[in-house]
Structure formats: C-alpha cells, structure tokens
Length: 147
Image 1 (cartoon, rainbow, N blue to C red):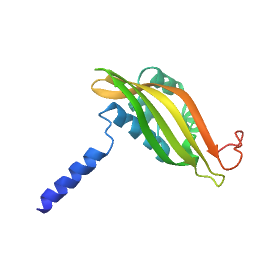
Image 2 (tube, rainbow, N blue to C red):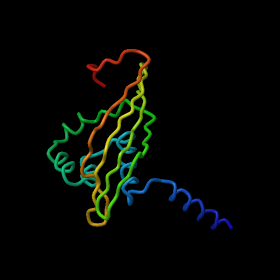
Image 3 (cartoon, rainbow, N blue to C red):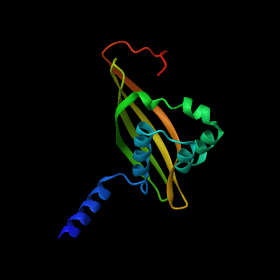
Image 4 (cartoon, rainbow, N blue to C red):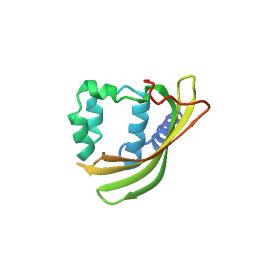
C-alpha cells in the first residue's frame, strides 16, 4: 500500500509539472527558471536554436549578466493564449505577468509570441517576438532608474 501511494504521488507531480518535452512545457520551464534562478549562457544555448541561439552565442558573459533584468520581480505567472503546432514547429502566444519586488509596487503584463522548433527530438525556442507590455502602478514608475 505504501509503495502504491508513493507511486501515485510521483505520477501526480510528474503529470502536473511542465515538461520540457512539450513546446509549452519548455517555454513555461524557461520562463520560470529565468525569473527564479541565476542561469549560465550554457543553459540558454541548451534550450534555444536558430536566430535566438545566434544572438545568445554573440553575447559575452558580461553582456549576458547586464541583460538579466528579472532580479527585481516576483510572482511570475505564464498563461498560454494560443498554440499552433505542426510536426516540427510550434508558435505559442503567451502572456507573462509579474510584480515588482521593490517598495514602489507595480505589476506588468507582457504579451509575446515564441517560435519553437524540434531539433533532434527536443523542442527548442528559436525566436521570441514582443507584442505589447502593460504596466499598472500605484505611483509613477521611473523608467530611467536602474534595478
């Protein structure tokens, strides 16, 4: 009985967590990791291809650290709006929402389209297109202030 219960828990958590084996699972995993962990260039190269991978390869480590703008946010949520997939390619429209970790609180929603492609039986993000961003704040946001 105890082994059965343990097996059920493993299956339940495995089924509920996003899997990098699916296009939306990979996208959600990368967004979560970017918002919660300090990541290396190798991490990004592992999960990207095409145009996006070329851009990351061209960045040096210092430039990659400067582009890490997500250290001052919390409560990241990802919502998939539309997913159009064929055998080896997928286009996902999604919204990422988050809040500021600083005292002057504001919330942000950003809508994007991710292009993913299957490379050697693994999904990789090849391009991300920014569509729009919406900010809501209780007080003025200083866009020139560094994080």
